[in-house]
Length: 267
Ligand code: NI
Image 1: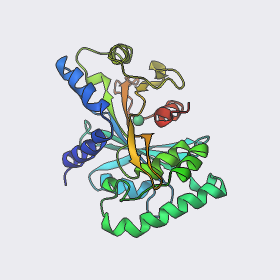
Image 2 (image 1 turned 60 degrees about the vertical axis):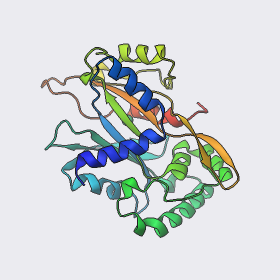
Image 3 (image 1 turned 90 degrees about the vertical axis):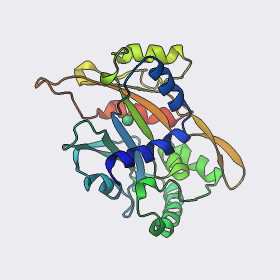
Image 4 (image 1 turned 180 degrees about the vertical axis):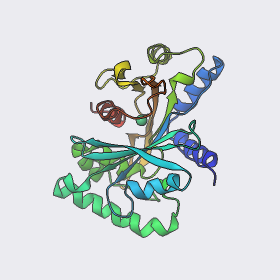
């Protein structure tokens, strides 16, 4: 499978959980905008057979190289970002993982139970980046227990291996050329932006500004009943040139920390 096929398969799944994506694309296409994807983000647990390095393989064999490491202490996460030197316009890949050993014992047990399920199903899913939740039926009480300590863990428990978000690269738009203008347009069209840490995360001085809509809510069948939970969200990023004239391609930990909260409706 070539990279384009991988991205469109990931995008189709992502869109199906996030109806706002099609609405935003329709709006932008009506304005003759060009939509380029800045990065795709994945989530996982830092456990041996499913950690960042395992998810990264699909991209590393297709020319991606790790270009940055990040630590989100409060959220108990680490992350890497990957770039493709052969195709500089290919989206960057951002993979984060929950440091499970830093959670409470009770939640470590819940995640280990989920991990055992994943390990049993893994042979049927050689391409882990498309594995989704592997047919797992989550338990709502356990979901809530995880969410109390880590919203990230709760999301992972329900949704598993899939793109958590895609990102519109503002620099490639023809008319809405600043993130400020873009956000204003999105708000005028009745979308809700994640305001944690301010609507715009980052600054020109940090070479990256980001914003995102709050995740769409979807109905999920839990063991007890059907409940509505936040799924995936759409992110928007504007990059600025470094002193060498090239656009900054990395991420700002302090900003990403707040973007993670786009799936957190209790904030
Ligand atoms: Ni992102």
